[in-house]
Image (cartoon, rainbow, N blue to C red; front, side, top):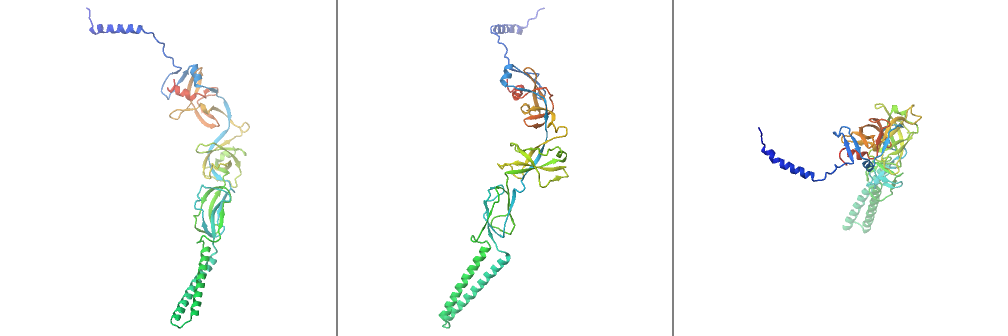
Length: 396
């Protein structure tokens, strides 16, 4: 028995026409990509990138063979900038008086040696002020008495009981009393610092530096030895470093340190100095050591926190200056989106495998690796970022 499918008979002509059309065209060779990712898996897994020689040249890939080097042991600790003892001064009032000027003086302001900070109007001792007050009061009383005499002389003259001479003498006495009172009041005002006149004493900066603290406001009365302002010379500063007592013996007598701002600025060399007093904190088992840093540009300010890289040594590595460690160039290290650390290792010609590593610390432009790669591995330096983009579809 034979069955006929109507749909099959309708599709046969269409299939035949498509076959003839495809045979009539020239077949093109498949496009060959300059790079190829083998075993593509999710990002968290390792993959191998295989590229052509032309792509390897275009990406500018350079490699380095890892070796075990002698690396100096270091500690990164926090430090605090301090003014050099003897270079921080406190300006005080030499005598009792009233301050003038200094309204624009603020903490952090730079001043130069010899610059006038305040004008001081000296005040006499308390007993002299008391004498001036008594003299002014006596002059005031004398003026009231002479005015009363003048009024009496004028009344007598009006009643024809007095003389013109007596009235004139009374007027002269009033004028003298008014002059005496004015002089007494002027002396009292001048000695009390209530006028702009009188002798003033300039208060000048003893050195060039930065204002650390302003202790008094202008136009105030101060006593002798009252603290006015604190200045610090910042051409050189000290760094106080609280170092663990167990590391003190590992710190060389002439060992320098690297001082870095917390904002990522360029490091500066710190030279060891002998501090006048050595501090220690029993609760944290630390002892203070001090280093001097050149600060001609006044980049560091007293009280600023900094990062300090301290080089340490042991009896075992004191002679060769370090301990054996595996290092990689900083340019070879890559970070993924989650902060993982990776390097590319050449496993065959034009073939690179991404491997996870763990970096212990940085030593200059080298990174000490604790695990992930072994000595003798060929690691990519230049072109590592390009390989990373190739692996995840960033380039073709």
